[in-house]
Image (cartoon, rainbow, N blue to C red):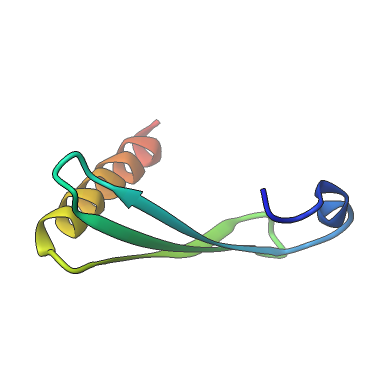
Amino acid sequence: MLIDCSALDGECGFLAANLYAKSVFGEDALVNVSIEKQANSKITGFIRIRSKTQGIALSLGDKNHSSNRREAVE
């Protein structure tokens, strides 16, 4: 973690993170995550996947979509 955990204490309604991954095939991917806690305690946000190749971006997007759909059903 690049930030001191004490900085996360208190009220904060949003979080943003950049994640990097490399596939077993050597493809690079960058994922930008941004979430916000609404006044009604609902959490909303965006995920943006960037990659030079379309394959890994589509694969990560499909995994995210199926994970979100499964959680919505439960």
